[in-house]
Image 1 (tube, rainbow, N blue to C red):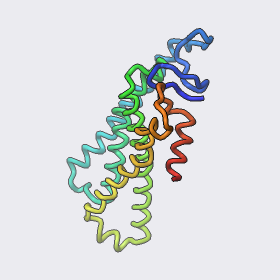
Image 2 (tube, rainbow, N blue to C red):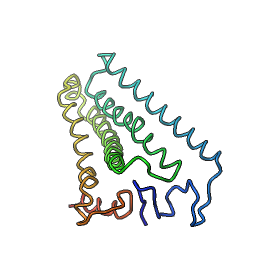
Image 3 (tube, one colour):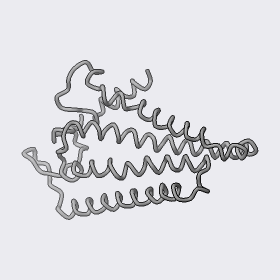
Image 4 (cartoon, helix red, strand yellow):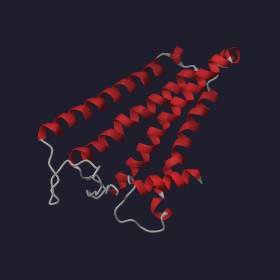
Length: 201
């Protein structure tokens, strides 16, 4: 049971069935694909424009440049890249059921997808922890509110940890399993199981 990314083939019954073949898969009505395309394009526009406005506000208004807002900036950057890169690259596969963008872009997309989504989660955790400190250590927190160096270090740590969690496993997956995989299986259940073991180790 695994998706056949990058070659236009997959065998998982849960994979998007956006085209017919000799196996008897049903072809969804054309209007379904049109609606799905419109929804995804709308999602991309909302995500990109919304997060771009947040980034622009941070750049233009210097009064927003405090420690807490740096973390919101980091979250906006990761979400902006999800909308600007990850979703658009994934759209052709969702709509056609075939990966037509090449093996190299496939691996790049996987790295970016896991990196950005994980970074978004870590940023939310970091914002929550920052809010916790602002309540439990209010005096000390206010004294350090204008210090941005520590905030920048935490922002960079989020990206580094997010990459280390999945990036090496995706990039070196073929070496880790001990053989060259002609058809990438990175989005498969075996990959996720392997990553789980990798993280635990």
